[in-house]
Length: 136
Image 1 (cartoon, rainbow, N blue to C red):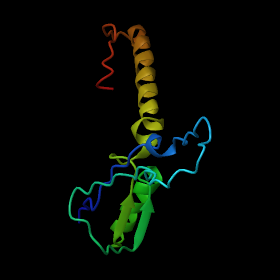
Image 2: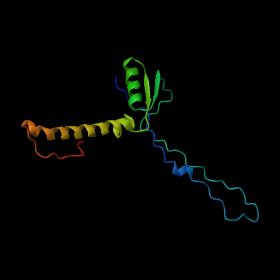
Image 3: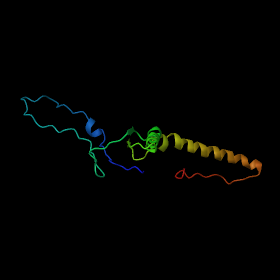
Image 4: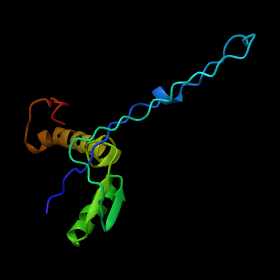
């Protein structure tokens, strides 16, 4: 069957929690009364639906890159209950979404455009190519 999202978290950036505290310019003359210092900002967790309190699985896959999603789908095909933990909204990781695979698609288009230039010698002519990067 189809999977479904069981929890989505939004985490505040590190900048809110990693800034070092600044020391006062000079030490106070008398000991100051203890004050409650603000706690570091905690990560904000936003549940987008009911949060299960006890979720079990046969396989837990960390990362939805090419290896992770392949492993998750294969385990599900074998009838195992799978939980896939992914950092980003889209599966596939950097390789599928912005790295290797999109780069290979661009290289393929460039090779086809180059090959078409040589068809004129065979009696096949095309107009000058134009690129629509949004469609690529």
